[in-house]
Every structure is written in structure tokens, then in C-alpha cells.
Image 1 (cartoon, one colour):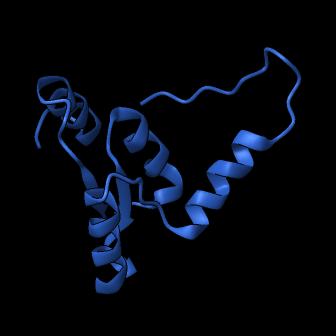
Image 2 (cartoon, one colour):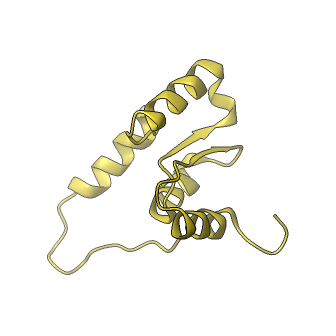
Image 3 (cartoon, helix red, strand yellow):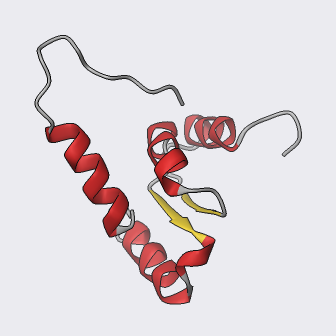
Amino acid sequence: MPGRSGFEFIKDRIASNPGTLILVVSMHDEVVYAERALRAGARGYVMKEAGGENLLAAIRQVLAGQVYLSAKMSSKILDDLSARRPRGSRRRSSA
């Protein structure tokens, strides 16, 4: 997509049709991009290298109205959310 990022596309698509379910299938490392994709409005993120069974599981989960992430990425996000931080020191990432 010359001239725009996938994150911009996701945001634009969700803005124009809020009911759209987006599953990102990417070659890029989920540790770097999955959270940004979810913040943009995607309902899941799966790496191409994850294989067919994981891709089918991701599709089924998103179609069922749930969010899909690999176990590794789910654990990382939950760890980040549950980490004890002093009040007001919330980390922010840009999408």
C-alpha cells in the first residue's frame, strides 16, 4: 500500500464500517506490531509463519467475536497490563 501504513488502513476501514472484523496476517514480528494493530482496530494478529492450523484458529476466533493473539503475545500484553507501576506513569505506544 504505497503511501499509507496498514495501521492507517485499519483505522480508515473501521471508521467507515465499524462492524468490520479485521485479522492481520503478517510476516512482521508480532511483538513489534500486534499491539499497534489491535489499537488501530484489528481483532487479531497472526504471523504467516504460524502455520495453517493457527491461521484457521485465528479466523474462527475473530469470526466468533473474540480477539486472537498467539499465546506468547497474549501473555506479554497481560504482563504489561498487570505490571505494577506508580500512578500516572502509564506507558503509551503510538499506532
